[in-house]
Length: 82
Image (cartoon, rainbow, N blue to C red):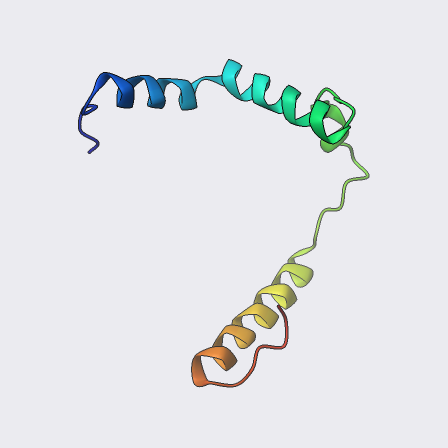
């Protein structure tokens, strides 16, 4: 369990970092500095039917590959995938 803030500065710092408006403001400044066009998030595009949906077999193969790579690194052999 998180205790209370130690000072008013700590309290204000945490409130600022929890603020969605602050994060939107920082994102806008970041986009302007780096010349990135601000594209509003469109959730319908992310959930379109053409979005890649891995099958159970593909998920199993990916898990198996990562699992054996982790076992290899635990034993001391070099990793194959980085």
